[in-house]
Image 1: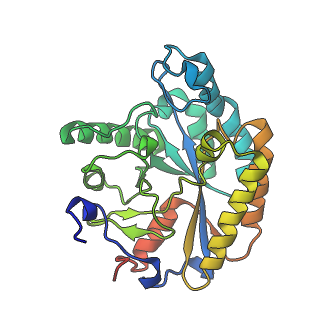
Image 2: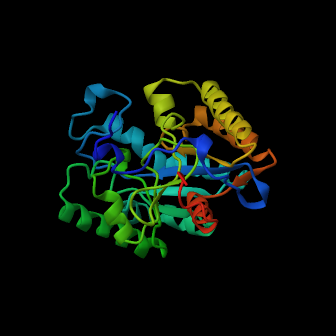
Length: 296
């Protein structure tokens, strides 16, 4: 079967069994990072909801308040666990957070978090934007985050993992190295835009997917995280793997769920051969060690 141009537009097919060996620092088998989604939502637009019956109301106190628990309370509970287990956050940052929640930026600066761009807010998707509109939008998001954090972001995750066909090219022009939007691998790989890479990010292990879409309990979440890690650890005997753990403070930061996150982090960080790191460091290491073509 012939592939169309769009089938191969973003990246080439590369089975994981036919790639050069990936080696992580100090002989680690698994590179582990937490993708901490720190987001702002517009009060008059629908978004991720726990109860769809009010999602179209303006305002929607039920669902907006549920999401707003994250920056007000849930995040600070999560920070205690990240600090306890020595896990630096890879922050997927809406640029509007810089204006609304400056205390969060200060907490991240104190801890040396990695700052990735995650759009302006989580109510605005760039899918469908024209190239000029998208370029101006991405430039504004990038400049806002760079000014507020003192670090120009290298990584990108689109709100709701949305892109246009032009997104990687524009991001590269703005100085980005990698995206997390394509959730199709356990290793980094190059995109068909020179200098741009995909770093693994999982939608299955995302706490929104598990707790909201699939109604997992805390113990089921813990079991899933442990199973994911244990399988990747086994897979990595001969070539390194990446485990991402995407989290949202308004989801896993709820009091009755938090203990299971803490136990999951304890399980992962207690193993030898785990590089507890950031997505920035994973991308930089992959690039610097010559792993430039996943299909070579």
